[in-house]
Structures are given as C-alpha cells and as structure tokens.
Image (cartoon, rainbow, N blue to C red; front, side):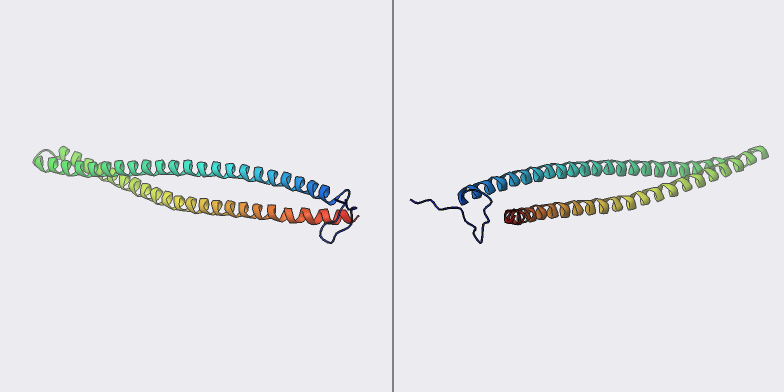
Length: 182
C-alpha cells in the first residue's frame, strides 16, 4: 500500500499531517465538546429539579395558609353565632324581669346596646376576614400563574440552550475550516 501525501481537499482543509491524523484530532475535539455540553445539560436538569422542589414547597405552604384561613373563618362564624345566641338569651331574661325597678330596665337597655355594638364589631371583623380570604385566593391564583409562567420560561430557556449547543457544533466546525485556510 502506497501512502499519499497530504493535500487540500474540498471538504476537509488540512492544517498539518495526514488526513487521518487531522480527522482524529477533530473527532477528539468534537467528543470533548459533546462531553462538556452533556455535563452542562445535566447541571441544568438538577437546577430544574431544585426549582420544581421549591415550587412544591411553596404549594404546600400556600395550602397550609389556606387551611389556616378556613379555620379562622370558622371560628369567627362560631363567635358570631354565639353572640347572636347570647343576644337572644339576654332578651329572654329581660322580658322575664319587666316588672322590676327602672334601674333594671336601664341595665337591660345598656346591655342590649353593648351586645349590639359587639355584634356590629364582630360583623365588621367577619367582613374583614372574608375580604382577607378573598384577597388570599386572588393572590394564590396570581402566584400559580406566575409559577406557571416561570416554569414555561425556564423550559424555553433550556430548549434555546440546547439549540445553541447544537449551533455551536456547527460554528466550531466552520471556524476550524476558516482557521485552516490561514
């Protein structure tokens, strides 16, 4: 078998040595580049998993807050019904002692007024808590939408990074071709 001298080819420009040696060098460089790209993609996968775990933790935190709000709302409703029940009890007691002295009459009206004020205050508290619950629901929906957008953006960035990695392979080979011309 006769060895050929290195020559310029239309497909492969030879910088030095025999075409086989040149091809081996380029393949080694391509394999190293592929390994580095694969490691970067693996690191990105870990980052995506960490973000996913963080989102899961936030979901459980929000779920816990939601159950806490429901408990507060239930307690407020119980207090409101207790106050209404006490108010009816006071009215029953006051009707039983109508025949007593005027001082008892003033005491009864004063107590009714105080209970009415307390009922109004608890109504205000209940309304405010309902507004807080509604606001938290809206914020929960906004947070869910923001998280969805963040995951979508991250997914798009990963896809772009992969495309850029593929484009870099092409750019590297064209740069090597250009370098070999000099």
